[in-house]
Figure: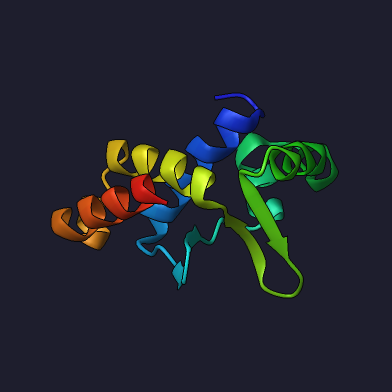
Length: 111
């Protein structure tokens, strides 16, 4: 896995499954999933934090993520669809349960 947009989503899913927790925020017209910290992701890739930051900026420009001051980095609806697919591949059913994971994926598809 290399440091890239896809790599960040894949590493995020792996970390969330390894930690056994997925933080999901529901809003009127969105489902947002909290990503691991940029520092944690940079450690996963074995690079300094500042190497990962430009990728987060690009992902934000593409409207895949949203940085919320003092709260963290969250997926947008499009980012949630992408991350949920990867979470399924990585075995997130163990955390969320199959029914909830499929319901989240279906809701994300409709947004």
